[in-house]
Length: 116
Image (tube, rainbow, N blue to C red; front, side):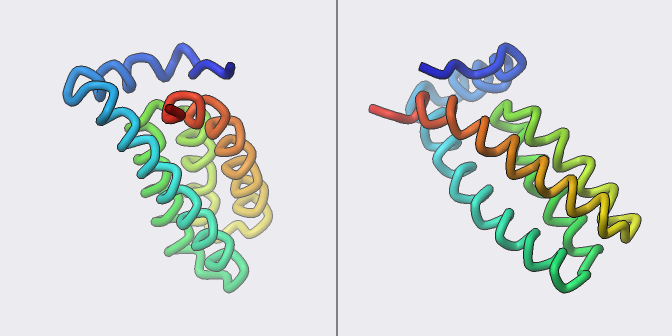
């Protein structure tokens, strides 16, 4: 079993307090779907050198990640946002790889929490 990182506990506790385990599961499932779509969007924006929309999408994903306690994802997204805002293709590409890696790790504990 993969447990969420300790840094995720406050965010998850706040969600749980607001709506119980059902809301936690709903938000985590929603985040998973959103994250998958955002990564595809980020890849497309980077490939077409649309750095401003890349930065905006990275910001949106990072905010959602922080909301559910996926802080490693949020940190990687912050780096991606900065790289996109600076129109730095090399840093943006590396940061996107970091986002994808952090999401893969987060899915381990997210899947555990939403599994019946």
